[in-house]
Image (tube, rainbow, N blue to C red; front, side, top):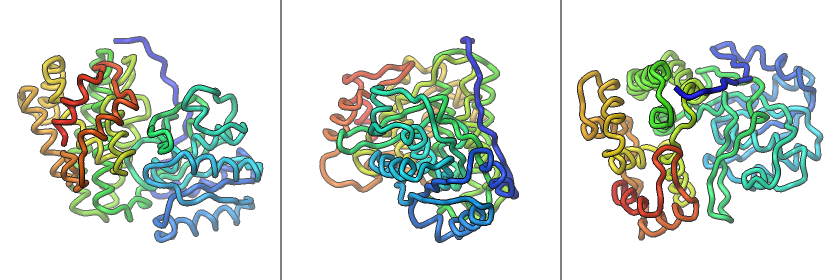
Length: 380
């Protein structure tokens, strides 16, 4: 087991009455609110009117920035930060899924400075201060509601990458499973795949710890049991609740205790697909993960076989484990090959060039350019 420090300052409010304490939680930080949200869904569902009504009733002064995309853009982060800076906001309220919360994390550290937000990603500047962030989650997937990490796209530079700071943890996150009832089947499936992939990244990380392995296996089994049930019954709030809780636990730190690192190579490769073709994040992971495991099957054979045997409750080889995991992703309705996304033209060269440009690698199984072509051949 590796030495580790556990730290998570986010206060999590979970359940069907979670939003009842939203106003009092936000009052800790002031009255001027920057409300950040995505596109039409938050308004169509009625949540926007509900939140704004709560804020006005609570005596808050509200300005807003809407239109955050599912693969969030650095331009929106800069524009929202400019609004927050101009209005001198006291607190940010992010209402949406991981893309909105990720964007809001970077907005929170960008408001106090005059630099472009991308300077945090390049290391040109370091976060020294942040506007407090409160989140209301509407999509169970990324776990962004209880971790400090944000992934943003910069199309001008051809990059999609992550940033995190102890300052970018949400102060409070509100998780009401009822708010996810309007999420369509495909994005519900992508969220299930995303939380499973987060667990896999931890499983293949650096460090051996049996208890943390049991955390990982339990979270994935929860997703495997209730994910298919939810996809067959999208209005079942009990299933929504179970998947929402699993997604939060998959990336709030507990799956990394006793490990010095996870192996985020699959996420790095998946970001290239999202950047190039606007593929939903979860879908990019189901395309890359089986291919990655096949590519590294020899050095990871024991670990892959253990994963499959634990998940499917029978002795499996590494190859059989990969096949079973791929079949599970298929059963969710997620793509396992890039060709399933019906993208025209040459795919191999643009993906290869994007991986080279992004220096796709991993913390444990380090990929180099020689690995890219083989990996791409396995997921095309």
